[in-house]
Length: 155
Image 1 (cartoon, rainbow, N blue to C red):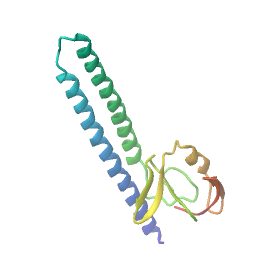
Image 2: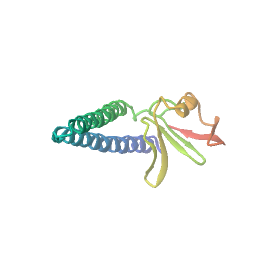
Image 3: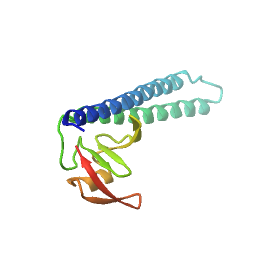
Image 4: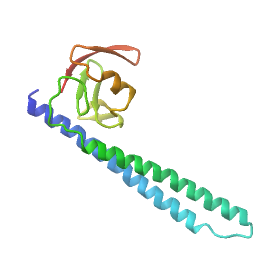
């Protein structure tokens, strides 16, 4: 793979991550709006406690979705700052790591994704596995899923 192909591939991974997080943001915004609407439309009934409980539940649900929305926005902002134009020789933010069985992209915590018919684990730089991989280079090994993994290439 040429240097330009490596950069193009990492840029495609980053773009796929941005699309996934943008979808999560849209879903969270919609959920916040729906929860607010449900809380606002809760009718006052003769059983006043039921009304208050319904409104409180709606507000709790809205707060939960608002936290998810804020977290997704933070993750999106972090991902946008990842530089995919650098070919790395050690594992760090923005690096793609290929092993015999698994591949990893240190950028955002999106878990297992299939991109270009390849299974790639998107790791947050704060994830324990990402911290374990930090500063490793091609040829180094580490333990993952009870398997000894050898890093074949990093870029």
